[in-house]
Image (cartoon, rainbow, N blue to C red; front, side, top):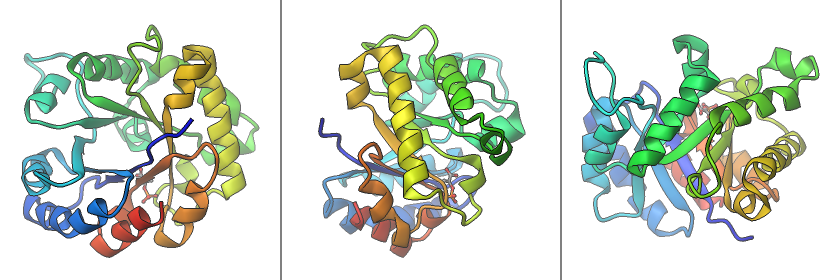
Length: 250
Ligand code: PEP
């Protein structure tokens, strides 16, 4: 099945609103020149400026997280409903930094995912093993737990827009990229988990992005793999030339 590639930039806690808007503007030609979807995920404070700069272009703008309640006394949180009302299209969920530093669990990822789907945001579900887990031979166990935990109670119809990002934690921000064979093997396994959960046809339609030190010089080879449908890019998405080169590598 032909899946439209998605190249997503996770800006983490970088770039002021003005810097983000300038980066979006600089990326417009690269997004216009590809058939891939292009997404940037600024900080909450940078979302409006990025969305304004992206208006009328092929660049989509998403958030890096959302809370599951639609509104209420939840100081410091932003709901999926508020993100949707602000005109955003996507939300990253369960990024390893959220799991590692902010106590995110498969159960809270599931709650956020349900909320995102309810308002029509495209969820980009991030999963991946630590180096210790991989070395202990627990790769498949960890991925199975993360996928089944995050997707609990959701069927193929509700998950029609789901995007998954496989990001081995040991490759995030380290400069160490998974080999194409390691990445493809993990992606194929994730797709088999999706087949179990959603059925073959729906699983074949899910984009599975690779994340972890994607750079202009490794992007093309990674994305040429059968089950790699794009990239979630951290560091290299913060500069127009490197992110544009990754977009061009699709
Ligand atoms: C990420 O944070 O999702 C990521 C993949 O970061 P980097 O590209 O910097 O490894």
